[in-house]
Length: 196
Length: 241
Image (cartoon, rainbow over all chains, first blue to last red; front, side, top):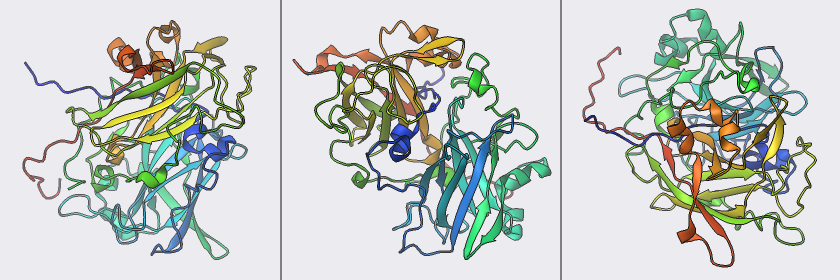
């Protein structure tokens, strides 16, 4: 007989009211109103400050205004779970505009395996009504040509134009560097989503 | 070491598919290309670590944590269980977030316009962490069913939303818990996005009379299974793979 393991608990959509549990202040609750889960770069954190923002679009090109986005990243030296920097954040799309944003630091390069490095990137999860199991993607930095060219995950995307769906481009807004990362759930610009 | 070993592959035929026309909102919110399989890197083998600083006192007591003038209205229940991985190992010190409607089926959310009454004493938001045995519990009221536009007026069975982190980003899971015996479960288009009855049954919490609190609360048992971390027998990655 083959060896059996337990089966994973199946996923269900986070629904339109995910904010109650995940972002209670946005839902209108008075619980944890001071919690700013989309600001990762506190005053003592080393690294280059960046803002990441974007919109999740559905297959009709409309913003998904109930989406919740989580990011997970290394610190500026490429370390996960480094002291003083959690590396994790969560933002809700704006109920009017659909825009989400994070204030964080630019991550360093982190190992892929024992011998290779990855290009700097954020891992992102998308939750929303109508998404039956969270979607997992990555944001890379379009201005990291050399590192991107070596990145084992990007290299594994055979259809090269699709690599562009994971690239965020920088713009200056006053003294701030803003990386724009839109996520397209479906359609011509459909973002690459991973099965990891 | 926390990031040793990758995880058992996710059985995508066990989970609901992205696209299910029975749940209409999924039609425009599901990717059309197949998900891209990729090898697991340090980014997925690690995950955020939350300490008890993430918890406020009372976070696991939804009957009282949003109280204004008294306790929340509804059928008092304790929900408890263990978080295990696919190999049956307890997942220790992991954060669970829960959210739900009130006893009348109304969410405390600025976007919920259902006619059922608000309960000023109920927020419907809770958190707890597993202990060294992977065990968790929280106290709440049983949420009510509510209607939603899908096929005219469909009805959601009573449910509690769960978000579980696990030890690694690869284990992240968001799901919903249902209540044993609820006749709305088999009618629900969202429940039915899950292909098999065996998988759907994993989301149904059993009435647990042995653990009810006499003259206070009924108890429901809900065990959760996250992806299992594989053993690393040999480090045999070929260069260039």
